[in-house]
Length: 273
Image (cartoon, rainbow, N blue to C red):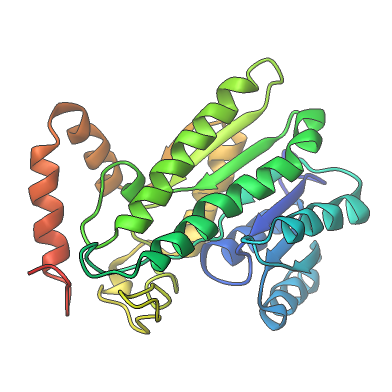
């Protein structure tokens, strides 16, 4: 049975071809939302769109790259052309990295910021007038790395700290517009982000240093996201690890520094010595 809250709500999702983005698209479409999918890989976008339509959902897609401002505009234009409005924007597109700052090519950090931060800024800028009109919602998929810096992931942490600051400011600026802004922090999730994480020279690492089977699934994350939007949550911490980090951060940071060093140093082929 479809949830009335999401019925006919036009929802734009970046990074929607796989992982958390794909799961969110399928979940919200099942609740009655009209979903607009954005990503670079058309064959995967087609697959997700067809999956949604086969179960009676309503979806369309736009092949785009969040690092290109004009293509972010194209995604928003696709939503308006198809459905005439935007109610929810979910900025999910992102990449990670794994290398010590002393060894990493600086272009890797530029790439992380272009995708994770600027990709969000471009989409929010293009969608904001429509979201203000609908008194809608912006969701940014952040990370524990945006609460406390993670060793071996300088670019990733920097981008997520930037995302959090950006979204908090957009929220405050639009208090009178009744715009809902939610920062979602999933923790470690079983998706392809670690397989595509960039190494020191910018190449993809191609494997995961973690046990994916012990992580939260994208489908579970999607359900929490749906809950958070409906409840108008400002922050959504999705696992005990994220909650613990947030709590300890308020007390002392030195404990977290040592904790994360030990955790990351245990990864296979860790850049940490």
